[in-house]
Image (cartoon, rainbow, N blue to C red; front, side):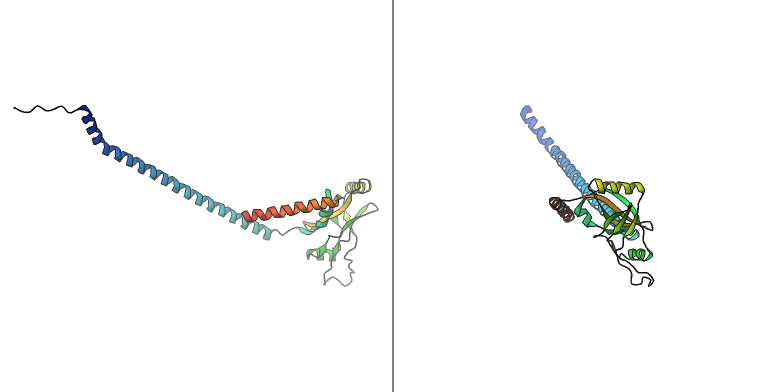
Length: 226
């Protein structure tokens, strides 16, 4: 007589099924982990490549801008001849005018050679005309012998009648001072920038000095940071 098969308990069957499926679950989990790690590694690699590309692109832009600025500096010379920084220190400058200057030949040659200084210059108003006074233009050694140069002669400023009227009114009735601030080239002509200003008090000068010092320090810090 053959023995009767015994019925396997239900709990044992469930455990056996779990044991049969465990290798599959473990392999699926390992596959998911590997896929996740590959995705993270790919994302990290992509970010690294993008960062390197961005730095290289920024560097190329900086180099191109530097080359462009050098080309601009070399290709287009500055039109500034002389500046009167003292005027900006001594006065609050307001309305500005552009004036031509009546110059002699030797003066033009000296100006082209950079032999001009307007720090001590001022505007002399006389008989309805404006003159640039005390501006020093040093003659060249090769100046013509038949010309007697006057380095600090009064040079007439060429202004419109309306501009002259504004300057005379401001200086005589409103307490303004007319000062030269710059001399520069405009095409092949020499121009003088003049401005109406009011004198600064001592505390105003100190405040201006503090602002200038702060601007210099700020620029120095920005350069050091970059």
